[in-house]
Length: 227
Image (cartoon, rainbow, N blue to C red; front, side):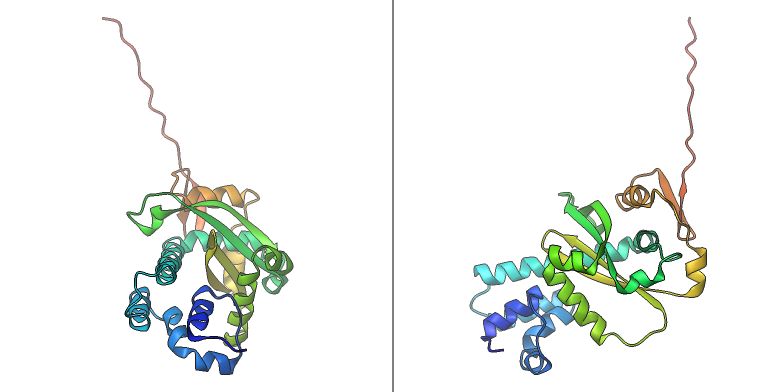
């Protein structure tokens, strides 16, 4: 595959294609932007385009780096909720085989509140897709998943892919499960609504030992006394 330097940079930063190993080696200077921290990636962009930092291309790449970093941080902040949601979405207790045939997709939207990673996004919906469905809906993301699984060390643990997306921007998390976790995690038929409530910071539920528990509601009664 023949691509120019700028084209290779775009391909790696947007994960648009899976490249051959020779092509990856040749484009390592650009690929480092994805493997580095967000600060390092921005610095690398500045080095690659020292006289072009204000161009639409560079600005778009910087926006993508920032969005992917924000989604990744949101995943870290909401990891406990995502773990419980993933277990229920896949129904791992009854269908462990789905780890190789399905992907959990959590769709976010921007709230306009950028004070923290927790408040920057709001969950719209979470669903379990077959890989064929994901390939149709988000072909770029299915390619990234195949590349991640190909390069992942072999493990006996069940591993479930979780894709968290906000529009065209996305981040993958691969969760590994041991036998005890497959027993301890609770199953709720209304898992989708509970997960959304927890992830969006509502107070209806709280997590106790990794499982959601409905909060007790306290009623306050007032008595009107006539003078």
